[in-house]
Length: 122
Image (tube, rainbow, N blue to C red; front, side, top):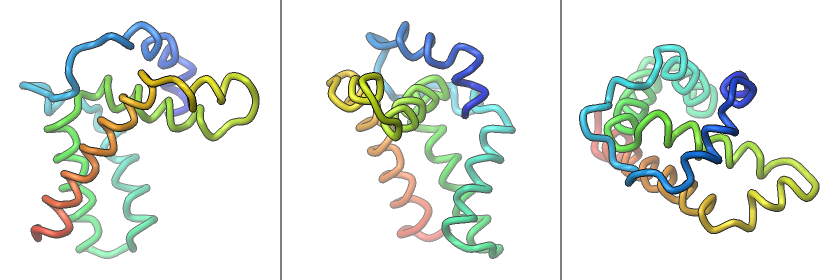
């Protein structure tokens, strides 16, 4: 995620503020393999290193990808990362509605993924 930010992720975030709706159409496969693997590793670290966890975490990133384009995912993740800082810049990321909307889209997608993969059974 940090590499994405360093490679222009912040610029893409700023340019994409008035972008299209967060739903992905035929772009389920626009998530790079590295991003999917990174998500699964983090998910498994938080949920246990088991085969069941691998299955649920893989399901979760697939569900996210079916709901949210990769660009929107990167934008929301960048906002969340920037909000963890201190100072005026991080305050801007905490107090701007358009950033709140991006994070809300990610949270809704994560909730849907949890329902599909953790509560509905894999």
